[in-house]
Amino acid sequence: MRRTGRCIVAVVATVVSLAVAAPASAIAPKTERFSESGTVPFASCDGFDIIVNFEQTVMITEFYDRNGDLVRVRGWFHGTGELVNTVTGKTETGSSPSMFFDNFRTETTSIVGLQFHNNVLGEGIVALDAGRIVIDWGTDEVIFEAGPHPGFEGIDWCSILAGEP
Image (cartoon, rainbow, N blue to C red; front, side, top):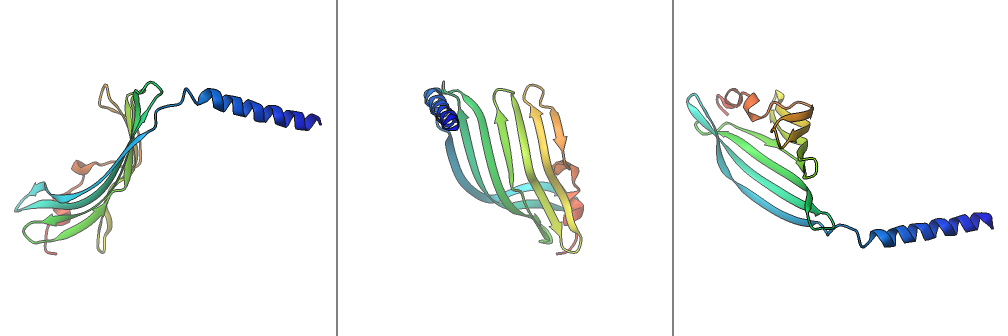
């Protein structure tokens, strides 16, 4: 009997807390999905240029508090692409499934996942940016970093795409 009484009290307490929390809940998130593709210039090298042919799918979700203020944005990206030597046609492929989180309360952006990776046949991974980075909006500085993050500028794309296909 005593055990049943505790169970009833626990159930009632849960129901009451949910009922009280319901009016104070946040506004439903808004999600936008889109895909895009194209070709863009990427780098100029000695004797050739590099272009990128890409396709990407993007999903952006905005989260609001009960007052309707934007408190967080989550972005999910999945892209694939080709880096192409415009003279020889040498092509390397890569992909970049990743996510970001904008936190309007802490004024930070967290980027997580595989920003990009590129493989060369017979050599394996020649370019890799993966892990987690947290950026402060006020200073635009990285305040946390885990994983390799050379960025696009830290990779010798001209050497990777030099030569014949």
